[in-house]
Image: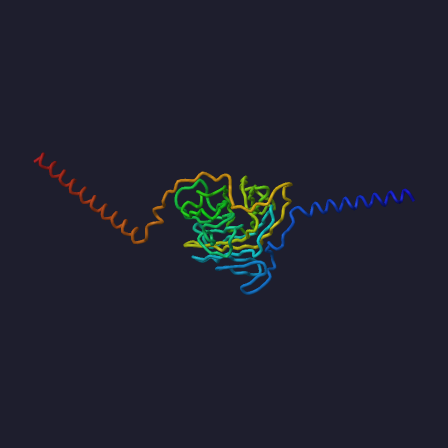
Length: 323
């Protein structure tokens, strides 16, 4: 009987230990459904539970299309619930594709921002935002030289006082970035945005390898609670389909003793700004280019006439010397 009681006690102890392990495991990477968008999408018409969509956004059975492959479109989708999770990781399944082979744009932005549902010039969202923006920039006809190719992923933290300068691709307010050839893939593409202990880390899986590849990591990032997650996109003279397939938010365990932050968004370090070099082509209209071509032809004609006159005078001088 004593041996039996011992075995029962051991079994109970092991079971409690197992429950403790399960409890600890469940507190890590906990899916917050109130901030999650997955198929099948619920709702119909112009409403969907927990999510607002504005602009050109279209909800289908397989994706949320922020913009179609047409010029001058803006669209966005925003979670209606403010996030009060201190540390989190957001997984975004997306697709950018279109008919353009060399010219396309503009791109997608993933947001953790104070204000939502405001269309504007920053990849479909309003400028002078407050919060975090992750930009998936595909615009292939850029102003000035750059030390990277496109598509390009970058991050910006704004307290509401900075503007995103499209002429410089936001490089004067950029935290960090990396090249990422995510456009026109025949498989799913993913982005992971992790904010943990004031460290922002962005990773991607765009090569269908079922594993994350780090894009960049930045320390000293402070984001307040109570902001909203969202995604937006825009097209201009160039266009693409910009689709969001899913957005999943996971709650991470906070470091012990870490306090909640309610101040303005801020970052300790920004990348050094780059000088702007104006793109002459972008500031000239068609008739100006035509006028320049005409003037060039006239100039070549004048040079030809002058050369002909000089040549004839030299021939006359030569003939006078020999007769």
